[in-house]
Length: 383
Image 1 (cartoon, rainbow, N blue to C red):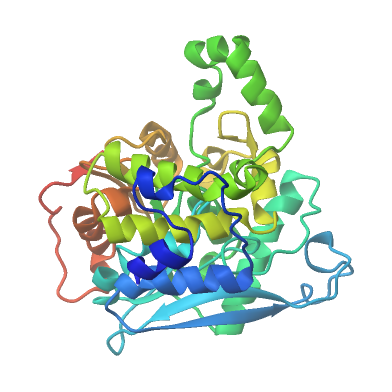
Image 2: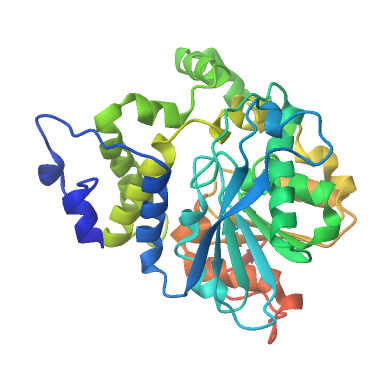
């Protein structure tokens, strides 16, 4: 499969082989995204079903169509459900910003051995519908993700599930659990956004950085909603090579843990390029949810006292997200809460150190699993 991609699609091998006098323009589309997803998931041994779950054109009883869009076109959420043993607890997985559900490709086999795993692309991302993004406030933007996920849940007839969210997906999962706690048995937040304490935004180093020309330029780009995806699209035929350089560096040269194999790197690069280069939609949430520096405009710390769902935080040792924010939130929560750190892992702990990450998830869900492990697995650290 990887050989086919290298030869016929994105041609992503060595620098020598990828060099061309005239760069080749690589088109993308929904069909390209789903095909790239299928190629990436070919490394997963567990059987699965991929479907587009129709969530309708607008919330029931709403006077406006979905997300203030003028379109009456039904929306759909790209969903992958893996084979599982009978009576396995359901684990729903939500990806982070500039990612899609395929980023969990290293985890599906292990997790499906003990859960009924369902992974989704959030609305406006990956292989899901990409309606025009017309939200103009933080409240509208949060509703875009929370309400579309709730309509997906209804369409799938799900209840009593474990909800796992990574990074921005952790933010969405948290907001969803605050609004619909009756459906969530347990919340697993992996390097979640939105918990950084306000002191981080006002710290001396960040204030100094904003005063530099680099900080000023980046802040302007952020407030102009210039996203990484726009950069990839703007590069045209050079886009795939830039994506290859990123995946090779982040999950290879500069990986803090288990580097990708050549096949994994090729397949992930192909997948990431197509998901980034497609029509802009959900990505445009950035400036409405976060201020410059990825500090939430409506911090989850402020809602900690309203928490109704038992929660486990998981952070890589080298995660750039601040786990001290989770520690601060725990002080105000009235439900069980634990914080686990995974060694040899950064922000993508589930890619960097998948085996130990799986141990963290199994431990977090020990009350739902048989047999269960009441002791913190070796290698993990409690914070």
